[in-house]
Image 1: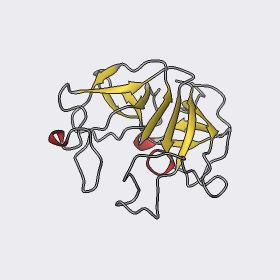
Image 2: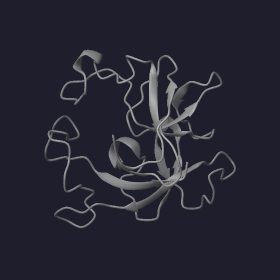
Image 3: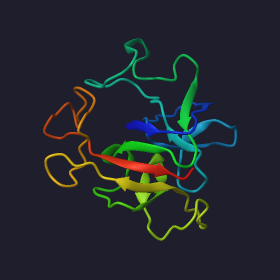
Image 4: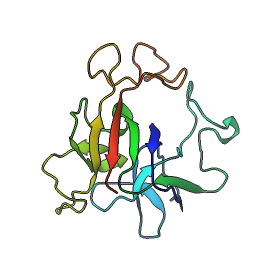
Length: 176
């Protein structure tokens, strides 16, 4: 899940068949120029702005007729690109970590996920390490660093509509 705060541009790319991509996951292009989940071994192109999947019970969707596939009409997926973008991403859905700290460096990992690698120094960090961005804020609600945004999407809780387990948001500044 992703909530854009600021972004430079959002081009769209055709999606490779058989892909399940959630908004906020890291994407790259395959050899045919189609969007796929980043695997951490090749340069990513950005963060997915759309979801390509099938609708599950309790899931919010803009158009019910598309059954959770926001790419159904065009076959293209929008991708947030441009260094300096600011995005709230769901720690549980998008990051391979249970907690993060401000200034943690996030790199592309398998399955379109982000993971912390504070020894990475550049976008093309060598040895297949690709910096996507860094954590610039951890929203606080009732408790310090509890990852809650003061406003949210009504009814949008993880997992399975459980209001006792709300989404955990972090603000990421992108470098791609």
